[in-house]
Length: 401
Ligand code: 7TS
Image 1 (cartoon, rainbow, N blue to C red):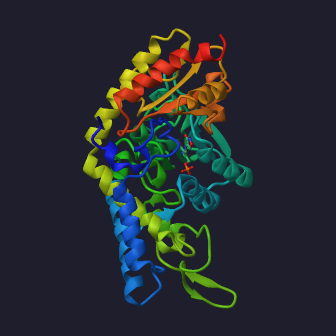
Image 2 (spheres, rainbow, N blue to C red):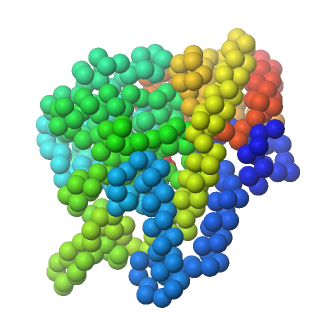
């Protein structure tokens, strides 16, 4: 039995196989305890009060910022802006940096495998500025080649925004190569780390990321807390995204000056308990260790892909190498709609995602309307994989084929 499983209360007393970890992950007691501790000992509005509880709430909030900075190798804590999620982080960059730096005739480069959260903000910037949105396209196995990168990123490129790991194919993109090319042309690099941060060690400096976005809920923290990393000089140069309390220096009747980063980007009362949960989740994952996380996921993914490969009617998308999936296995069963597949698996207490996975341009590129996706995490087990593969082999029969 997986020794981490006992940390997750949701798994006790049922036989549910939770294979929808790319959508959101489960929370261990360590995270819940940290949030309860905050709530029961110092819940107050941080950054404002001059009394003990508020001072301790501020410390807890800033400790979480420090944990997040260390987690992704940021040089300074002030380079970490807390947001609600990856979507808000990417919108912040698009509205603030994008609208103030992109002009007519410029280009923004993304890839065809982006989540809608890393497409729509750039469509908005292009609509408002007259810039053009350019798509890099991978090989059939999901690999973005150097030739493709070099052919799409040019002197016209102002922003390159790329998923570190695809939420459908599970492939890890060559961010460093993309960043080097983008920087050589004077463009900034935004990385969508929603699917990488839960699975692989991240260092924004080694990657060459100017901005890096991720969500707490995909790495064992609560929903409603996310991170935007930005290089300090870029954040300092950007206008605020949201305005109001907490983000000001002085307010006059007609004008205002703004606080320093990161407060400039954290208008209103912050999600302090969520941040505390995120800090605890980061410490928890560091305790598990990314070597263990990767090894466990690779073994489970190999077992899963091997099992599915023995079912002739199943097509798995992306690389044939389980090590290149980050625990994400997207497939179709010939003749079966993914919604039917997911519903029939639910009757076996198996939770998977079916549909377009908020990546409709990628679905079109794959020439499918939808897929079924099993996504694993380090707390899943071989027994679950075996039960899943056995059920997947019976789906066509259950649906009357
Ligand atoms: N980027 C990627 C690569 C994602 O996978 C997701 C969420 C997001 C951005 C948005 O994250 P959020 O926390 O702001 O919602 N992906 C998924 C998924 O694959 N299934 O449900 C949510």
